[in-house]
Image (cartoon, rainbow, N blue to C red; front, side, top):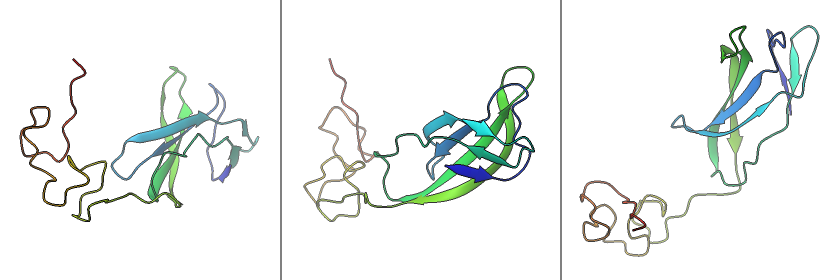
Length: 129
């Protein structure tokens, strides 16, 4: 992928390109492979995004500072992914990954008897032991 802009800087190391979802969760990151000498263009591989759902994502480019930290954000943009829509198997308005019983349209956020949930959250993670 090629990203154009300005202020891409390799003085202290290659910039990092981070991808995050609409809730701000990081879904992937890569270091730039190449930055032009004038800092207006960079090339980077795209991380594996095969598990993301269709939707809008944020791409952020950050330069490395002299202290060794990636805190100098130089730009961001949005990108759209498609081809993997979220599924609502029972049609109750809760996607399967949020629904504590994705195949019963009458149970979606009150599955207290499953794994000791509190009845208020859509999905309860079961303890493995």
